Image (cartoon, rainbow, N blue to C red):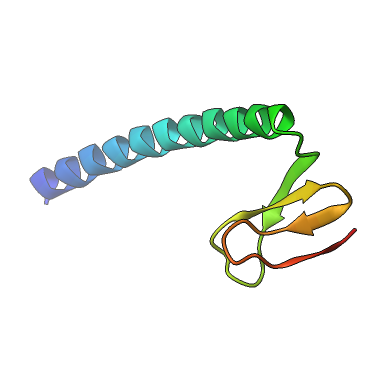
Length: 75
C-alpha cells in the first residue's frame, strides 16, 4: 500500500503542476486575445457562445457575434 500511495502522490503532484502550467498559459492566451482584438477594432471579447460553445463572443460596432457559428445580435 505504501508504494501505491507514493505513486499516487507523485501523480497528484504532476497533475497539480500541469494544471498550474495550463492556467498560466490560458491567462497568457486571454491577454494576447484581448490585445489582438483591440488592434482589430473589436470592443471586447466576452463569454462563451451559448449556441455552439466553440468560441467566445465578440463585440464590435454595436453587435455581439460568434466567429464560429456566426450567431449575432445588436447590443
